[in-house]
Length: 237
Image (cartoon, rainbow, N blue to C red):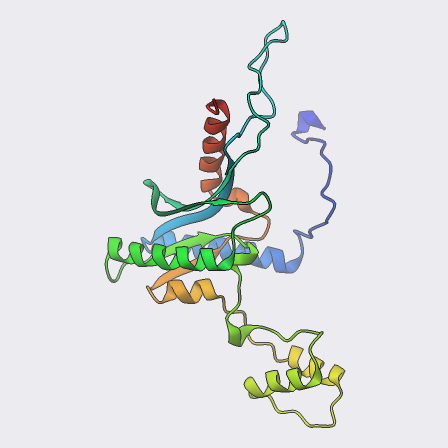
C-alpha cells in the first residue's frame, strides 16, 4: 500500500462525513466563488488565528549517531498570546491583533468582530472605492455568530418564548398549538443564516468567504503560522 502512495493512520474519534452532500456542495461553492473572484481581479486575503507560548519548544529534534542533540530549555508553557492576522499575495498586512490570553482560550466573537471591522475599513482605504475585496476565513465558532434576526429558536424555550419568536418573524400561529407544534412550526421557518462578521465587512463593501469545513489546509496562512512557531521553538532561548 505504501508503494501506491497510501499511509496508515488512526481515524479521529468524532467521524466527519466529508463525502456527505452538504460537504461536497460546500467545497464546490467555495472553489467556484474563489475562481470568480480571481477572474474578476479581486484582492483576496486569507485570515486565521493562532496561539503561541513564551516557552515554545519543539517536541521532536534531530539527534546525531551518539544520541546527542539540543536539550529542551523550557517546558513549552509560559505566558500565552493569541494572534489574529491576514495574508495576501504580498505577505502579511495590517491590522495585527496580538494579545495575552489564558491557557484555555481567549479568542471570542467580540475580539474578532472588532478586528474584522478594523481590517475591512483599512482594506477599503488601501484599495479605494470600486475595488473588489474578499477575506477568506474558517468556520470557527466566533466567526459564525448569527445576526439576532437569523438565530433559530431553542428547544429549551418556553411556549411564550416560541410564540414571541414566531411573532418577531411574522409567522402566524394559533393559541391551541402545543410547545412541540410551535417548535416544529418555528423550525420549518428558520431564516437563512446571516453572520455578524459578514454584515460588518459588507458595510465596507468587503466580501467574506468561508473555507469548506475541515479544509484548513486550503488556507496559506497556516504555512506562515507553522514557520513562526518553528522559528520561536528553535530560538526560545
